[in-house]
Image (cartoon, rainbow, N blue to C red; front, side, top):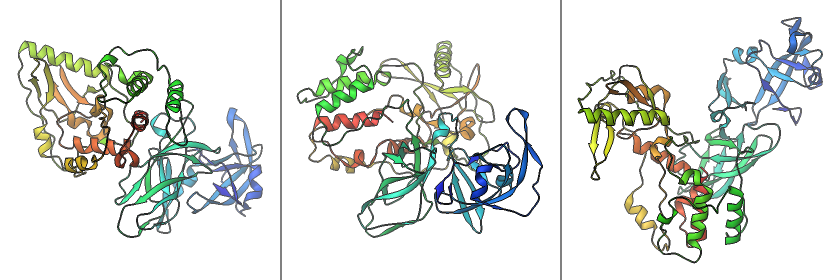
Length: 462
């Protein structure tokens, strides 16, 4: 928060009944001529600390909004400032841990205070990114816009991912530097006229780059020497994979196959076949099943031959072990169908036709094949990127998991990751793809294998 022209760290303490501050804060505020609500507070270790009085502080958040806070000054505490339940409850504020924001209404408008948890689990490190102020985008303009990101008191780099549909405005996924809670991202106006983005508009999410993430940067044209340096930092690009003899990249330029193989080796954890479920996407994409007011549907289990029951049980055991599904409960249940494929193996399917009939359709647009083919005109190199178990990288929303339940002789199970057969699954998967592939990936066409290699590398890092 900005206090007297300088950035100061303010901590949110939902376990504290009152907001408190150390004696160093006395010069930054004004004393109120009122009695303190308590004479002392209990500090760490059970020590009692005297309350010297109540001070009022005028602060400014990263969006330029004024935030007035009353806090008790504590003797024996110097630089700390803890925002307590009196502030949060008095304003009926909401703490949104998914977006990393405290929000409350004041004088007809929302006040938004970004925050960052100190010991965050994996998902809570992702925070919302919003425009600092209203921004005008000129026709066909490509310009940097200032956004607010919840960041610690030190400067750091983070990854901006545009997860919000902004119509005619394209936002580029990028690594950007956060300074005093603010950063710059690139916006492209594809509309035929001038556009205005409202202040505090949510544009996407920010993910801090921690010590576990290798950040590889380059300047200028991508050269083989740069690629080799990247691969050396990534891991082991030399030890062959078990099945790399099957890699076929078509017409090759000199050293192209070698570069692709070294990239696959560096990402061997993705290239090698694995039994467990792949990690869930870090993007803000979940599959929702909106059935409105429809009553839960419970269908009868279909009888299977004894061999069919064995196949069903082995599939269920494997998917439970992999973390794809779990034991279910509730009023929804659908039958399992075993479909024999051409090679003689059996595909495990769930008959979701009844569920799909009461599900509201998601009209998120899918790519047009004719437009995709037209965009390839003049390209020399062609490639495809196929996710390993792509549907299983998308979580089913917690509130909708019971709707995916199916029945076996051993009980009821439900999916934790998105299964096949749901009517809106393709739309959800397209949302994931639009988040993974940035503006350059969608619009540009590679002319050389080094450029193509670099795109594969960046996509693998999502």
